[in-house]
Length: 449
Image (cartoon, rainbow, N blue to C red; front, side, top):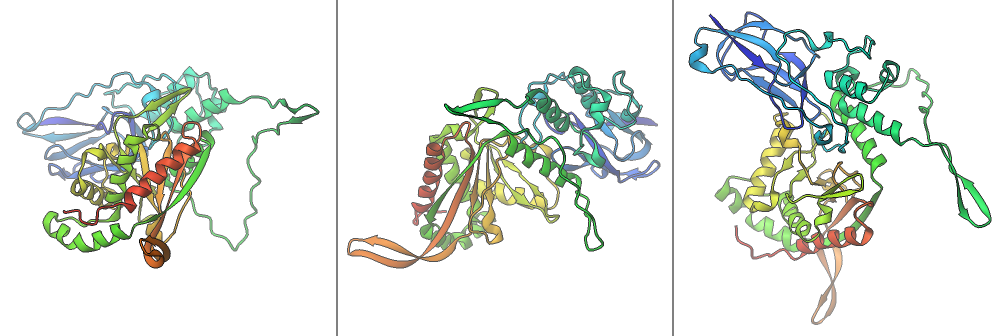
């Protein structure tokens, strides 16, 4: 009886490790081909790992909550027809730069780290490192960064981890390194000829702990909520946010959708919502204002040629995830509708693949889905802008006609966009947003499906 090595799968170009959330099978259990063996989690999404063949689980080499590099053998499956089914894969992991590692849109950092997969069956958590003697668990990637950056075990133990069970992730330690390097003592700045103003000391202490009484409930953040919290705080710290607003009369758009939605469903088998129409307008505007489709790397502006539009989706748990439609500008309205519906459905059922939440260059969030008329969204780093669409409501509006101004009932919505003022000035941000609004207002009511 031969044995097949099941390895931690490669989940994306920037993902070098994954956490085992739980095993669906035990040693001795029979598993069919494509049946789920275990669930794993990355900094992006949770995923299921199916069996590549049918057989019996012979060995399980890692336990729940272990952090395992990709390419590492995690289990072995016994089968009598291993040669006839599939050979054991050999995954070579080249050295990678942390500058290329993104965590759901986190900012890039120029720290060079080599992460190599291993085929050893020893547990990752048992590997010691000379410069770190703490009993707290750290992944090989985190240990490598700590060693290269000269971070002591005492400093490492002070880092608040956002990973599973409080584990320190690569994002946590790189943020710590950046803050440590960028910290400067406060100086007195001469801002006027006759007076000096000393800058206040930065906040380096934690806020006071709120006394806990009997009339409260303490809820522990889950892994995804901790990731979201860290990402939002980082974005506000990194980018100076500015938000612009425009009003759009989308009466023609609403009337057109109401008229064609039944035919669209019958012809393509897809429901047509407003989201693909918004994305279509955003793509047109991004081609006219390419700097809005960029990111910042130190003093460089990285202008993205691809238009990969992220669409924020609320999950049943209350958390948020942003699946990405790659090359959205190359799709027609039917293709966009299919992509939007598919990603939204799989996001709500936790079926997204890690690559489907990476590589976004611009994000759309629909606050109107919750009945809100407008919002001030936080930029999804390393992008430089995010657009929010409010609810569409009937309102009285002044309409100019050849016979004078009249008041009519129109379908009105508000668009808001937050942007990184390091790159996008108010004039560019305002013109881009107005352009999107104009495209929606000028929607061709006679457009065919």
